[in-house]
Image 1 (tube, rainbow, N blue to C red):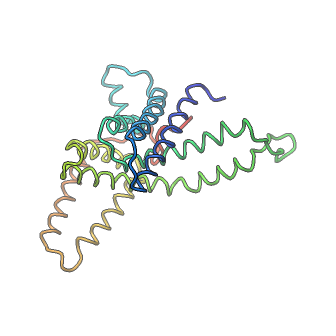
Image 2 (image 1 turned 90 degrees about the horizontal axis):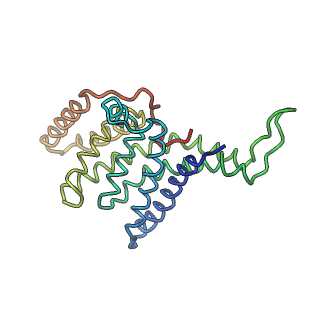
Image 3 (image 1 turned 135 degrees about the vertical axis):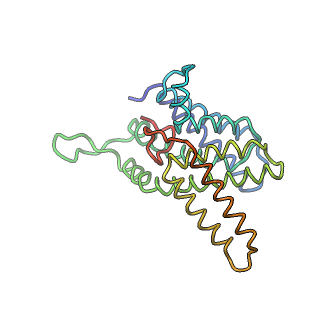
Amino acid sequence: MATTQHYLWAGGHFILLISSLRYFLAWFTFKAVSAWWYKTSYTGALISYAIVCLKSLGTPQPNVAYFRRAVLDENFQYLLLALFWWTSKPIAITLLPYTIFSLFHALTFARTTLMPQFLPTGPPATAGGSPQPHPLQKRLQVWVKSNYDPAMRVVALSEIVIFARVLLGAITFQNSLISPIIYAHFLRQRYYQSAFTREAFGISKRRVDGLIRRPGIPPVVVQVWEQGQALIARWVGTVLQPNPAAAPGTPPARAR
């Protein structure tokens, strides 16, 4: 049976999903939209991620051991990032990973908790067996399972695009100078914890290589690109250990 905490967790995801879709709709159609929708989206994220962090990490403790566990927990990382975006000037694309996560969480919650309350069950598959879920629940489960991996790849690629956006924004003074620094550290941790992120970096590197090494590109550009890769490799390779309890590619704030 779902608890109050579970309903609050799901409520945060529904708030995030609905508010972000409203914000994206205006953004894509070049219409003015209140920043309230952006703030509300991240308010939903803060609710959901705070609940799951409290459940997985326990009550915050003022000691080094708790801090080390927290900073290596992917839910805590997304919680801190959501807090940073909530306090920053709106950047629409930053909502995309959270929106995708919330879509899958909301659909799963609807299938496992809401639908059984008003959809009739089917007959047992075997005599004396448990009743079968409604066909709509089965179709929803199949859709979630078949689209999960592609969606996580979109998330990983979008997070690299977000870094490019905030880096360019810092150079052109459209966002704070600290944004790319914070997001770079976030991506560094994601690289260690998510196979999807490592795959996305590989895809991005190959595409940039293909552009940089085309005939006619000045050698200095290639040299700068290679030196940049070396610097990134050294930075990423410094002491950093993934959280062994985190399953690679698992979306944050999953209901248990």
